[in-house]
View (cartoon, rainbow, N blue to C red):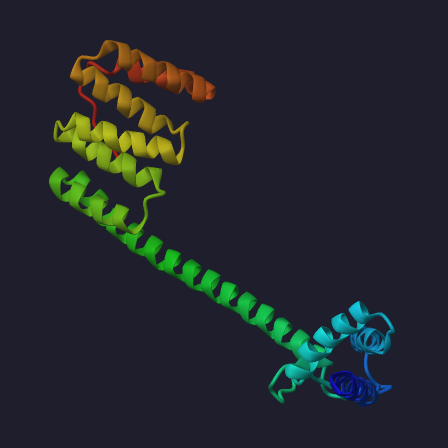
Length: 255
């Protein structure tokens, strides 16, 4: 009796397996990739059916396990003109994203990204332009104050200009000269260092550094920066010679 029930159950599973095979119909309009996915699914079902129909008890047992797994998940396969072939478990859900739609979304995403980059670049360029204009205006006010001998006022405006842009060796040098006129040689050296970070061969920054070290009594550093000025600006040897000759005389500094 038990054996008869087992045969009935097995036959029922074979019948259900065949039904799954029958349900797996092919739409001739599907893509090659969809067809390959479909055929892979068909092959899986065929293997299960063969195992269930086998005379080998072990094969039958293995087939029953695979059939139970497939039937319990209530797998359904969908193949249509508008949809990619998808196997869904316990849910009647169709993936409505076609390959073309996916490609279109990716293209739109790339275009949106490029537009965002372009917009960001334009905004940055505009912001830089505005900052540079502000810095130039503040520098002119600072220059006017320097020429009038209002060195503290000049420092204030050069500082405001540097807040707008820090990549100007002219601004760093101008503030350094203002500090020198105020006798603040350490601060002047710091500004010269920044000017050299912008342009390491900037002769004004090198000679102003030498000037500061001369006033601070550091002859070694003074000579070091004079030598650097010569090495990095070999065409200005005559000008550097005149600078050294005038170090001990009163000089009218200009920005």
